[in-house]
Image 1: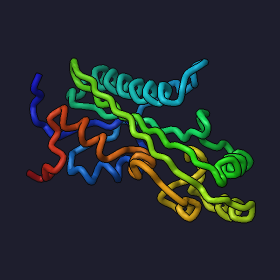
Image 2: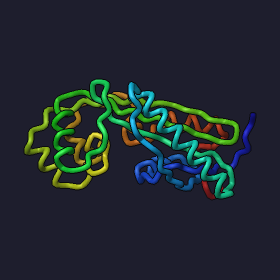
Image 3: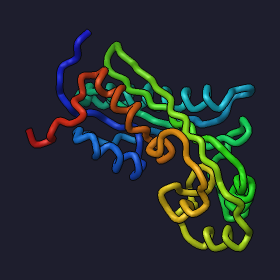
Length: 204
């Protein structure tokens, strides 16, 4: 089925990082964040979990469009998790948890998984990005200094890759933008399947 070229999408997110990354596509988009139950199911792997979260956000976002009588344009949703030794490291609730997370990641290699789902009428497409990140050893004084700032707050793994935490990183393998929360390559491929023109000028 060939979809019409409208070059407008919805995004089921309020993330300023995803907003910034989407601007690179020159695609018109409207942020439509949704809330879902993000509880990890028993026995669920990180890959299964992040895929389920992205799809659930997309399906909830699509349902909201229908309920509000909005134009049914393609809707994009994404979910990101930090994984160490097969276990998900979530977002810290406080400084104590933030310190524990950074101490745990110190000197180790972890993965950042980002699943992306795009949904439209009778059509849904999904993709998964995996980024491997190696941290150098981080001493407690450095962790204290980092936590004195604010960029760790509400961040998976208690750090922001594009911020001051970049000094902790020895090596990155995979998608840098995926580690930010929206893999550019995979997202572009998905949008093209919905006839969204990535380099279309928004004023034309």
